[in-house]
Image (tube, rainbow, N blue to C red; front, side):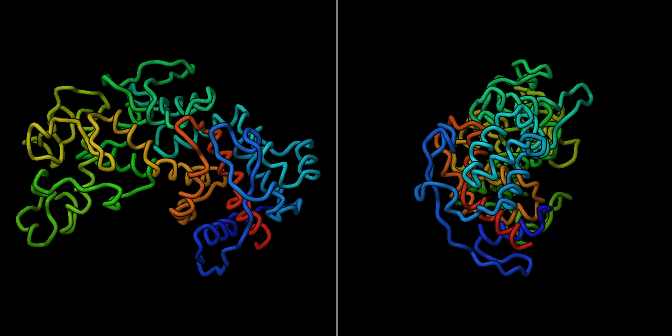
Length: 400
C-alpha cells in the first residue's frame, strides 16, 4: 500500500493541532500513552511517558499500517527498504517492534548523512565557492551524530570539522565558535544589510520563530537606542525618513527585535571574516544598511553601542554570538523547534504541512527529551516513537 503523504499531512495536522485543515474534518482522537524500561525505547537522556505497558495499546496493529510506518522511517533514516528480517519482526511484534527497529536505523551510518543533509537544507549551505567551504556546517552535523555528541552542539560546538572528518578551528577568525552559525559558509549564505538575513535564518531554523515574534519570547530593544528609521511606529513617524529600505510605517515592530539578534553579527564582514575593529557605523558612501570595509551596519545609534557585539537573546544579554547560542539552546523553544524539524525530516513534509504543527505539540514532544546531553538519535527516537506521531500516521494510512 502506497503511503498517502497528502492524507497523512492533513491527518497529522488535524490530530496534533486539534483542528481541521484544508476542509478536512478530522476529530482529535483519544489514545493511551506508553511506558517502557529506560534504555530500550529511548536513549538514556529521554524520559518515557506514563501509561500502558506497550505501543500495542495504540491499536495500530494492522501489519500494513505498521510496516508502512516502518518503511517510511527506514527509507529516511537508514536509506534503504525494510529487510526480510525486519518485516518478519514487524509481523510478529507489531507496533511494539518499532522502538528497537528505529533505534537500529538511527545507528546506521546513513543517518548521520541524512541528518547532515537536513541541516544543510535548513540553513542553505553546501559545496565550495570563492575559496569558502560551505560544507563545514554539514561536516559538523554529521560528526555530531557519528560521535554521539549532544544535539545542542549544532549551535554550541567550539570546533569545526574538515572534509576528512577531523576537528579543526573554525574559519571566521573569530576568538570564539558558534556551531554551524559560526562558519563562513553560514554567514556568507545569509549576507544582507543590517545582518537581517543572518538573524532571520538563525531564528527561523533553530527557534522556529519569525519577526515580529512574541515579545514574551524576545523583548524589544528600547526605541531610543536605535537609529531613527527603526523607531518608526506610525505614518507620522515615517515622514521624511524614506531610505528605500523596508516598507510601511511599523518598522520598530520588527526591528526592535531584529536589533537584538543582528548585533551578534556586527563584526563579521560580507566574506564571513571576523573584524575586531568593526564599528557597525553606517557608511556615508554605501547603501543604507552597510558600513565600510564589507561590514553590515548596526541598528544602534550610539557609536560605542554600534561597535559592541553584545546581543540580546530572549531577554538575556550575551557578549557575543557564541554565548548567544548557549542562551538559545537553553531555552525550551530550541528543542520545540527541533521536534518540528525531526517530523519534517522523517516524513518529508513540505513547509505548508510542517507549519501546521502547533506549539502545544512541539512543547509536549520536546518534554520527552531530558537534559543538555540528549543526542540527535535520542531526540529522533523520542519523537518517532511517541503515540501522537504513530497514531497520526496510522490514521493517515487508514483514511486516504
